[in-house]
Length: 337
Length: 283
Image 1 (cartoon, rainbow over the protein chains, first blue to last red):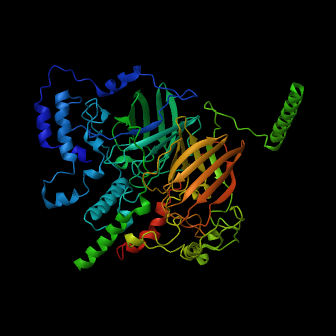
Image 2: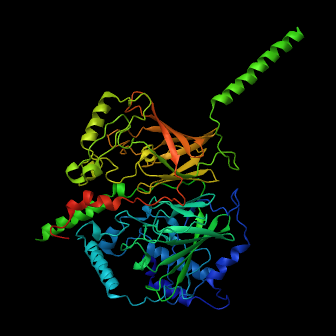
Image 3: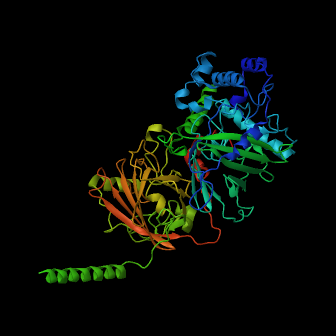
């Protein structure tokens, strides 16, 4: 999570800003205040969430230490500038290694990821109030061992020495990317297209190409034994909000956020149109086997310019990287001998 | 004079009424239920029950690629051609290439970016299948017919997704595995015009193929509450001598609470594609 690595500079700026005068309002409450807006309805009477939406933002998931929850205009401008400085790949400072890494430069990135949320929050997490993921619970030995094995694979990969394709993450292998909930902003392809028909809502993320089909016709979840990469989603309408509960995730490493436990993991998402061009996307995850309490994040989605299109994100079909990584590793090992 | 004209008008009027009556008698009695926008609702889970994914043309039952390992599991069923007239009108060079494709359908070599797509049926490698192949693979697909000029089609095979933009007239901005789809209604028939298809997809396991100039026009016509007729015309002046057509019914899957499940096949192909690059002695 690069955005969490906030520079000391911005902390100093934000902390030294005058904090008096403007009362800090809880972010979740501010988001929910938008309820006066009445969203359009589909011909069959459901709130209409259809369109292409983008969730890019520089606001970090977790609040940097010492920053207050909602910033004044001036503080927000400083915060945003500092995050953008950290995130941009068009910088030339930092030496040769950093420079090589930044060859994958801002041309390829979503420029919308350089702006913080319009409500000037300093974290996407709105609960707990400190804007941080709650403390982890101690893990049983088998989960500790699984995490250690994963960490060792990551170390091999980062050193340019993956043993084989299983040392790479699910996104690198093009199995799942941002198509699995919770939907979190990333460096590019932050679009989501929603299409509704009676009893069914399809959410098609740009990256990768899996549409998540959410049934709102009241049918039960799949039996627990049937597990999927994107889980099994059921939705219901709560006023103007679409509430989606997803279960039945696969147990492979890396499927769940931060290695949560599929047996106890639960995610609830709320999609609420708050004005003609915005959806509030709010998710709550709970897993008593991983975190000491549930936590909730709120990410604004903006309707993309009608002149823009959502593109197909082929990934596996031209996954040259995975072969380059492996051939590179074999050559390194050969040359080291 | 006037009386005679009236008589003539009456005569033509009677013929017209009779003609309408005959036309009604000849068309199927089914009229699809319409939605608020006046168009039929194609939403639901559909599947083709043809063997065209093995071969669009007439084909005998056949063994799999590795009968010594797969036995009858890997074998393919016989089937009759879904091609109008039976044969695909290939240019001579293209017919030779189709045969070569079939011979190397099970070969894979991803060691060189430049020849990455040269070998093997893309289905074997779990690549998005393109149009129209996605329609007749032996997996269901789901149509989600939106109310905002958008129809989403989600295919079970590798979770491929397609957005049909209704009354959209733009050029395809970039080639895509599932192409760019423009939809329109002709009466109760959904007509989808598809271009911008990646040239690497195949049409079946028999090596049938196309180029980047492929232009597909699909027609989905409701025939009963439980089935619709599917037609696709394929035009590709680089590969065929004339446009040609396939057709077969699509059946609505009727199981209670049936839903589209995942067939994310990447993990099923990684050993085939990348196993040879493993560190010697690892695992």
